[in-house]
Image 1 (cartoon, rainbow, N blue to C red):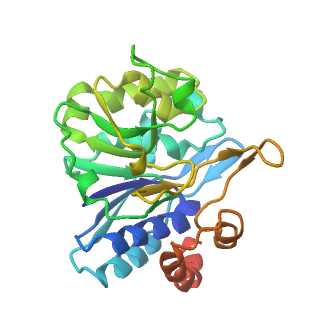
Image 2 (image 1 turned 180 degrees about the vertical axis):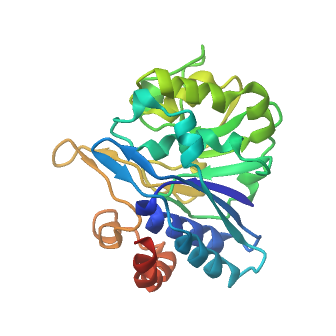
Amino acid sequence: MNILYCGDSKMADGLVISALSLRRQTHAPLNIYVLTANIKGGERDFNALPVAVTNLLEGELQKLNPDSHVYRYDMTAQFYDDEPIANMATLFTPYCMLRLYADLIPGLPDRLLYLDTDVIASQDPTNFYNEDMTGHEIVGVLDYYGRWFFHSRLRVFDYLNSGVLLLNMPLIKETRLFAKARAMCRDVKMFMPDQSALNKLARTKAIAPRRFNDQRRRHEDTVFQHFTTSFRFWPWLHTVTVKPWEVSRVHDELHLTMYDDVLNEYDRLRPALAARKQ
């Protein structure tokens, strides 16, 4: 199973939790590809994910399956060769756009499952991973909130959340989807740059059922739970953002305990992880 993540040193905790959750749900070898970069963002500077973190993660994955590997790619040069200038100061970090450079890496697998680092595998994702992608550049789930406000075709609901995406890399290269999306991020300021560009420019995208990217809450059939910001209406209208590495908040505010096996593993690794993030 080929998995793609993107981010900086601050995403190390989420990367480890997400990858460990995959290891819990499948015994198949995991080939994890991590895109990172050193990015100067004006008032915000971002440091690349250290090699020591990916080495630590690979060692943990190989305890269950020696054929699992973690590959780290420093994309600093590629990023600045085609910098998303119009969207460097959005609410989202520039790393949200880093996946759009994956087509520039020689030798990446034809099929990739992209995951945000705040996504946890709740069940075995093998069937989703093996979905037929013939003729589709990307496969994803409707954005829980955005589907009501955005669409790019005649179909009423077609706006995908980009936190869980199956990527058909040969077709993406053929249609130049990522290259066009990079150009759009460079020239057009957008609220959610990479997600908006992919939805706008994808010629062919398939819509998967909600259970493959549950953004609101976990259900019995949830395969991937995505810890996004959500709205709550009681006792007043407010937003709630809880990330998997905020373990006490996962328990106290979301009342989730079914991930404790993974979170306990993360807690065991936390001291070593903290030392390697520096």
